Amino acid sequence: TVKQILSNFPNMEKLERGPKEIFSPDIQKDLLLLEEQEGSVNFKFGVLYTRPAQVSDDEMFSNENGSEEFDRFTSLLGEKVRLKGWDKYRGGLDVKGDMTGRYSVYTIYEGHEIMFHVSTLLP
Image (cartoon, rainbow, N blue to C red):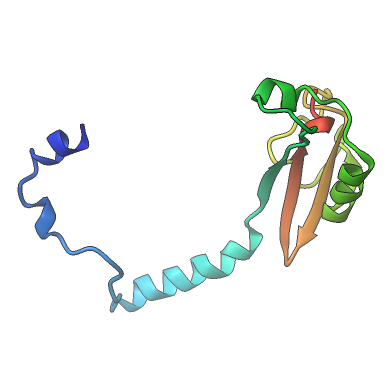
């Protein structure tokens, strides 16, 4: 257990935790640069369609189609894009051989590229 492992480090509870002020100008400069670069961070999110009374993962992930409301919802999230040949952020989806489906939903929000892994669009 964790307690057993920590018992091998008797001074562990004496370590200070929490944020520390950084006084080194070089480290401050590097952190600011990292913070600026963070604007290019991209995201992927899963969107799962569930029919009424579905309770198991297998049931939910086997839905090949969503409802009209679900389709409207995903259209609000972003643009439906063809994956084959896609040259922007792919979020881990296959853009060469349709192995992860033919389409996905993509958007750019506040400079961040977002690829939605929509369960009804996945094989």
